[in-house]
Each structure stands twice: as structure tokens, then as C-alpha cells.
Length: 451
Image (cartoon, rainbow, N blue to C red; front, side, top):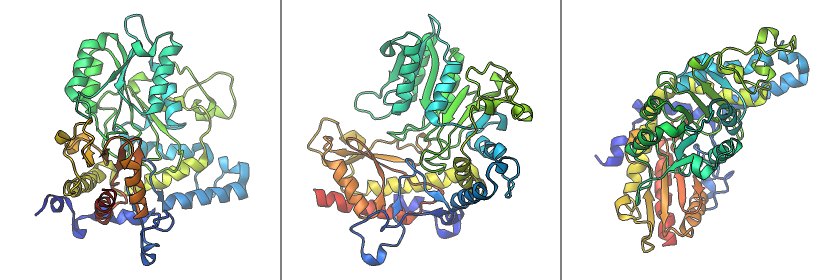
């Protein structure tokens, strides 16, 4: 049995594969795959970009169309008298129990609201309370740009210089991802000056899944507030925010949770912070029993839902609900994680068979004589999610765009991070083994063509 075969599940023991039928898969034709024969044009493409934008659940389309009908026929009455029992005044509440399952929280600790960066600013405004001694934010270098911008603007608003107040940890020379011991050592040495530790649950560029429980524990032992950006973690890897004593977390939902482009986001606040003043109150966070009496004094919903500000977009919420229902029927993230590990392991094994694969130990960044790709995502399955990031060489920005275009022409959809990385994400809910076979075969063909 080959390494690849050891990962591949048979149709008999791959029960979760049936959920692929719950999603609308773009075809080779609609994705403009020019090197696919005419008789294959209306077949599904190999979509491996769910880490950037998840596919549409068929139920999402149905729910959105229903809400458009309610808007057309019931108008304002849909807030309290809804023909499908989804009164608009409480629509977002349907997402809370499933959010709680996906992030390992109590229902009162999560809220369906806003956008990721708006929620991040909201919670930083709440939890970032710098003092003369403790004012720094610890994060990874090359965090997602919105996080970087948020950190910089937050510390600047308090009169600090980002270059001093933000500690960005970098991988060791010649390595692509952070070592746990380097993160923990920094917390141990610098913890007395750190106000907030905030990493990505899964790093968007490398696909590294950080040791969240261990990092949180170390941060709390040094008196730091610990938060997490779960944009690439929710719906991808199991997390247990409540049990790990995480203070707060934020996430978007349009990646692995498939809510649609720009979909509504979510946040988590640990119940131990109940009763803390909400510094940016809005009417949707006011207790529902008196919200529409419009009282002048704010009375927060207990827990994270007190952070809600404006009424959420119903169309965005039900688009999310369509996918969340599929998650629940599939047994939740723990069940899907097993299939995810198999799919990602299978992709890695297939890529290792490539004539153009360069092991990380043989891929010094300055060596422009190399031609091919290195997988910069950790090889340890527990240290990654449903993503492999491929760094193409020569690392001068000339190879990757050609590879990306070549894959797309063959009906294989990944996404890129300039100048040299393509990310391929086998998503447990809708990708299958044929998608991976197509991706590996197409990559080999494209590289041979470029070579």
C-alpha cells in the first residue's frame, strides 16, 4: 500500500462523502476551464479554495429565497409574524447553538453579528487596557492584514508606537512556521509587559494550526488576556474556547462555514466576563423583552449577545444557517475533522510523488536554481487544518501565477498569496478523492509545461 492509498477512504467507510450533494459545485464551464474537453465542461470543477470562500449550501439558496418572498409579501410584519417561523427579531438566535458547538462554548458565550474586523476592534476596545508596565500585544508575524491594521491602530490610539508595542514572532531562519517553544518562551520572558496575546487559530498563509490550549494556558499564567482569530479555524478544526479559558475570540463565516461572500461573523466572550461594562452598546444587545419599548437606559443581554449593536442582515443570517444545518447533520466538527485529516493527508502524499516536490530541508529560500514547490504547511497533521500551502521556486514571483492559471485552465481552483504561494484546501463537507487526484495530476502537467 502506498502512502497515498493509506489515507484514501473507500466509499463504504466514507459516510460523510454524501454531504457533497448538499452543496452547489461550480462547473468547469462556469469557472472558464479552457483546457477541459467539451464533454467534461458541465462536470464539477475541483474546488480547493474553501479556505478563501466556501461553496453555497443548497439550503442557503432556499432559505434566502424564502426570506425574499417574506419580505415581498409580509414586509415589516416579518419581524414578529413570519410564515416559516423565523421571526426576524430572533433570526440570529438560531445560529448561536451551532456556533457554540463549533467553537466549544456555551450558547450564552457566542453572538452572531458584525464582521470579523469590526468584532475584533469591538473586543480589543473592551479588553485592551494598557498600563505603563503592561501594554504590548503578542501575535505572529504576517498575521492577516486586518489583524495587523487593527493592532497598530489600537496601540496608536493609546499613544504607543506599534514597533514598540506589538511583538511579532517570526519563524526561525530557514523555517516557515513558528515553533511552540518559541511562542511559549516569549510569553515566559515578556509576559509581564504583554497585555494581550492574540494569534490566529489557523494561520491563513502557512496553514499552521497553533497549539491553542497550550498558548492560552501560558498567557493566562503570566496575567495576559488571551484572544484568538478563528477565521481559518472555525468549521475547520475542533476548538474548546470555554474549557481552555480563552477570554475572547472572533471569526468570519464565509470560509469553511460557507455563509457566502462577506457573510455575517461571530464572536465569543467567556462567561467569566459577564457583568463587565459594555463600552460600545447598541440596541440589539439590549434585553429583548424591553428592546422595542425603546427605553433610554441600556440593559444588556447577559453574556456575549449583549455585545450586539445593530439588527443583523436577515439574508446574511439565513445564508449562514443553511450551511450550519449541514454541519449539525454531519455530526459537527469533530466528525468532519477525521475526514479532513484523511483528505489533507492524501493530498500531501500525492504531492510527495511529484517530480517537482522539493522537501523543505532542500529548499533554501535564496536558491534560485530550484524549480518546483515546497509544502510550507506543517507535516504534523495535528499542527494544520484543511490546507496545504505550496511555495513555488524560483521564488521571484514568476512561477506561481503561471501555475495558478494552468490549474484554473484544467478546472482546478485554488487560491494564491503573492508572490509565490498557492493554497489548496480539501474541505471535508464537499471535496472528494477525485478532486485531489485531479489537482495533483494537473499540477504535474502544468509544471512540466512551464519547465
